[in-house]
Image (tube, rainbow, N blue to C red; front, side, top):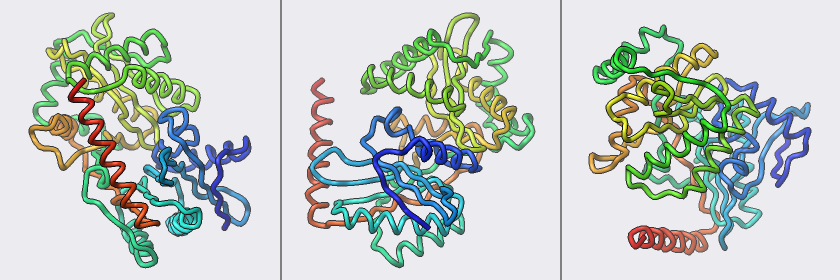
Length: 352
């Protein structure tokens, strides 16, 4: 077994990594080698391991800090096929960042909790001191729809309110969906998303949203990793969804409905249509991606939770984020600086 951390991939390494990812039944899209630079715009490096024959058997996108303290993290990864390899990879990464004098390293595994993840955590905790934080950001939960069921059974699992909305969408509204790589419709979708965020009184940057949507669109169609579903009422765009492919699973990434058209169940209709499309394309599940158990009725996330849970499905839990404090004294200074920066952001938002 050979392990490697490097800043850039060669053409052959990139090709081998993407072939490896395509061979997996499931991996989180954050592990695609272009994700951190083209989508999230992170400073990054790559990790991969190879077997005795030189075949890649584990790969991870590493996010590096830009500040005065050296920190590293992996979000929903690494991608892997064998838990024994993954365990060795985590141990290698811990030791690597320790020797490189990093202050902090964290890793959020990109796999649902099961007996093997429990054993993995036991083995890691047996060798290293792992810090866990019981917060939403460190305890990722989602809702997954089983697309192996017949279409009628999927619909029957929806809440009473969602079933009523779906019935209304098909019987009372002139709605249709279109799956296409269309720059004009993409810009209309971006404008609609910004309109929705403005109506919700959320803080955002128009340039960042525009970059994200255009980058995602290019990424999906260049790599065959999903689709954008445009939702029309007649010839007017009233909503849209971004669906990404993660192995045999699909994932709901972003969605928007026209806030002035709350009289029609745009996203109810759009997600049900997306389930049909994903099912036809061979996906075995649709992950609605994100359910915040810490949200209460004063939080908008509470109502997003309720919307997602209305589609039935099962809760899926990811292992808690593993945090490794490599330099305790520096870590305290790092946490203090991070807290001050967050407080400054809050003050600037309130004064804006």
